[in-house]
Structure formats: C-alpha cells, structure tokens
Image (cartoon, rainbow, N blue to C red; front, side, top):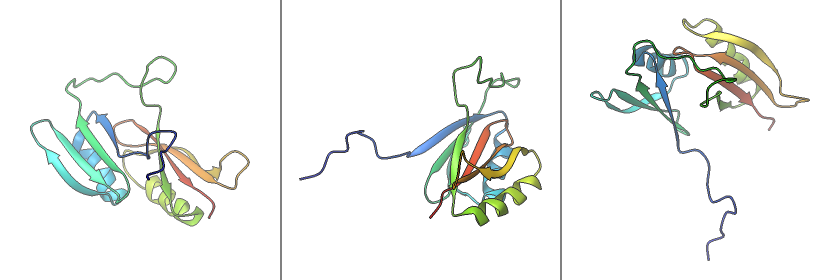
Length: 137
C-alpha cells in the first residue's frame, strides 16, 4: 500500500517565468548557471531549461514595455530560490554572478537567519529576483 503524503504534493516540477527579453535570460541560465536547454516553442516564444533537478520555462512577454514587479503593490513572484551544493559552491556562484552582465547583486553570501545555512540574493537579466541557498550537510 502506498503511503499518502499529507501535503498531497511532491515538490516543484517546473517554474514558469515571463521575461522581457528571452535571449539574455536564456543565455544567463545556460551560460552563467550552466542549465541545459531541453526544449523550445519558437512561435510562443518559450524555452525550457533544466539543471537536472528543476526545469524553468521562460516565456517572452508580448508587451515591449512590461510593468516591473513591486512586492508591495503587485501580486506575483517575489523571488525564487535555487539550492547549491555547499557554502564553497555558493561563494563560487556569487563570484560568477558578480562578473556577469545584467546581474545585480542584492547581497553577497551571508548566514540565513542564525545559520548555519547561507544565502545570497540577486536580480537576473529580465529583472527577476533569484536567491541561492547552501544548506548545511
């Protein structure tokens, strides 16, 4: 007999993000974070990217002058968080992000609350906030 998960879900399958310019955001994920492009729908336009654990769907916004997200005024994605292997990997990704065009570092790696987890926050090309987290082993 299969045990029933009381939450009814089993984690994130994919995350869909609407971006103002598809190519720079796709290039960020494939070039900087080394995601693999696993599909696309050119007429939509959309691309599908994966790091082997999570899949991201990027959609090109139709309005050439999109409204920027404001967490105090707009319902929507505040940020998303990706896990990295450890604190050393977090430092390496931070360095890579700091050297990447179109990325704004909000804060460098620091303890998450009282620790021992560490995290950082940045804005990626397209204006979406991304957090990176290293959990203790």
